Amino acid sequence: MDVIDSIILGIIQGLTEFLPVSSSGHLELGKAILGDHSVPKESLLFTVVLHFATALSTIVIFRKDIALILRGLLQFKWNDDLQFSLKIILSMIPAVVIGVLFEDQLESLFGGNILLVGFMLLVTAILLFLADKAKDTNKKVSFSNAFIIGIAQAIAMLPGISRSGATISTSVLLGNDKTKAARFSFLMVVPLIFGKIAKDVLSGELTYESTNILPLSLGFLAAFISGLFACTWMIALVRKSKLTYFALYCAIVGLIAITFSLLN
Image 1 (cartoon, rainbow, N blue to C red):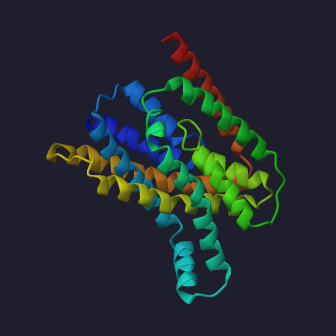
Image 2: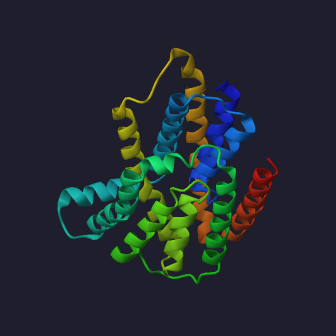
Image 3: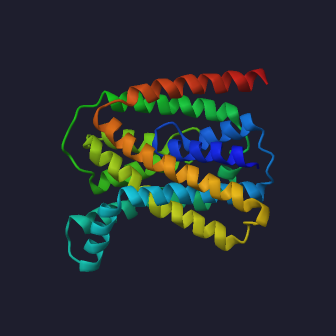
């Protein structure tokens, strides 16, 4: 993978990890357009680096929230911070179970399956449209809500379904405050990303060559910087009920992907 492709894919990952348009789906589309011929192990390493970059950008944006949560955990008191942490853990369970039990089946879907990506983008479009029409509330995420949102996150492991779009939309449709829904959505994925990175590193499947350092570094920086921008922007968009634009975008890209797949 050359430097330009790395930067382009890094920007795609950084923007689409937070914007509700499916990072996995756009990476598959990007690789197909760029003609990515990386061997699986090299592609896995690049994917891990990009996910680490977006996780780091989440930590930077929500550093104060994370500090409060950690302080609440260390105090061992039944306060809002401890409850929020437990809700995050609860929300992770569906994705962990699906990821462990169906890892091979999920990985088989990430091989340039443009037709599937197209249809899943249409599903994302419907979710975003419905969420944008929901009424504003001041309700915060409950424990039962957290588990249901976790199920949405597990379903979003399919390429083409936006993780942030699915989790934020599900939370909003459950009647939760839109800003709180976005905050919960972005924070709930951080432990999963680091867990997946640790698993990939410990598996010994990652390969590294000195020639990879430049494209990996530039891809990381592109994903990190664009992630900072997208995360901040997304919170403002959810608050202002501007998700319909992304619903339209996902619908258009989904139809293009389906048409492209059927014609080829």
